[in-house]
Image (cartoon, rainbow, N blue to C red; front, side, top):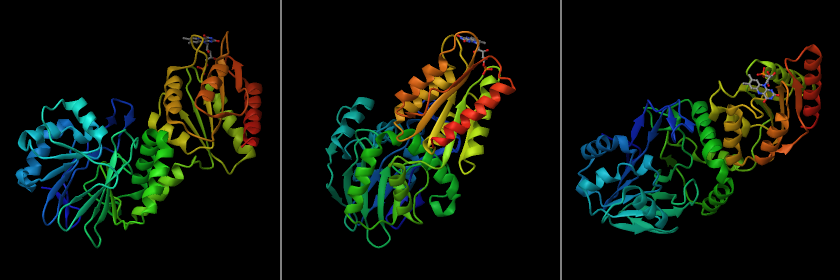
Amino acid sequence: MGKKVSNHVTWVGKTDWELKSFHGNELSTYDGSSYNAYLVRGSEKTVLIDTVWQPYDKEFVSRLQEEVDLSSIDYIVMNHNEIDHSGSLPELMREIPDTPIYCTAKGESIIKGHYHPEDWNFVNVKTGGTLDLGDVTLTFVEAPMLHWPDTMFTYMDAGEGEHILFSNDGFGQHFASESLFDEDVNKEEVYHEAMKYWANILNLYANQAKKKINEILAMNLPLDMIAPSHGIIWKSNPTEIVEKYLEWADAYQENQVTIMYDTMWNSTRKIGEAIARGIYKVRPDITIKLFNASKEDKNDIVTEVFRSKAVLVGSPAINYGFMHSIGGMLEMIKGLRFKKKKAAAFGSYGWSGGVVKQMTEALKGCGFEIVNDGFERIWVPDEGVLAEAEEYGKQFAENL
Ligand SMILES: Cc1cc2nc3c(=O)[nH]c(=O)nc-3n(C[C@H](O)[C@H](O)[C@H](O)COP(=O)(O)O)c2cc1C
């Protein structure tokens, strides 16, 4: 059976307690997740908004059947057609093959590209398009590239206390809970997951997000809840997460420096720690965090980089290059296009060196403002080198 969201809306999704990674292994989801689908029952018509991930398709359809006679579903609305939301469509459409699927034109092409249906009945919608369910109206708002070309939001007006934005991945968090609403869970954890989702998935589309949010805010619509397709529903103060998104979309930074390194024999770690001590001596107000890139969760490091005003990246020379964990992190960070962050590199080497220069180039490629040429020393640092590294940290801090 589903769970009641409001008088007209029932949650019919799937909570995935065991999910530990997503998008292959690109995104860690150690708090689990959920695939949220919603059944909206108006006085005249019934609509299903989104489905769940393909491995749960049979479970989804049979649970949906417990909730509603499938033949009474008049329309299906697909806000975004990545497989975690559309994966149960084939199983569902076997039961109700003629039910119209409302989605954007891009949504139709993605569904076709994924499932190759022969004759599903698509209805393409655009911003401002509506569906009348009797005492409930759904209005569609296209939101391309938040985070796929097909994405749209569906706004429901069912009167007092039931103005709900179904935002799909927007405002979502990979967070599994038996509770549906933010007011019933640890909000700090949810915000951590929401920021992680933003930093790792959405930040690349910050400009589109800002524009779309401002466009929706300008409509001055009443808003009682934001119901995303992953995690909990924002109910206690739904505009709070909207404001957070606007902050995050605007070259967000906190008073933090993140030092990310890898090391084979600890020299680079020692240099990184000495640099941290130097920064602290000049700027004790700054939060300094050190992460070993091969030991720490990569997406948590990305989130820490996102919230930093500056980043230091360290690696020893290995085979005339830098360590693969650092290469992987820099590749991830490059794709996310963080803005207005300062950076520099450091490391240890044995005979050829030049790796700090390579990392500095890579940091430039990430769009960071390079503070200086970095800090590179041969073999294991002695007390003298560590004092120099501390001094280097002080100089770095003076640029912040
Ligand atoms: C497999 C391997 C490959 C290495 N390749 C290079 C290299 O290409 N150029 C260089 O200058 N040093 C090279 N080194 C030496 C290391 O950079 C040196 O030992 C450094 O001090 C290690 O720093 P760490 O303690 O942070 O791991 C290599 C070391 C190892 C173990």
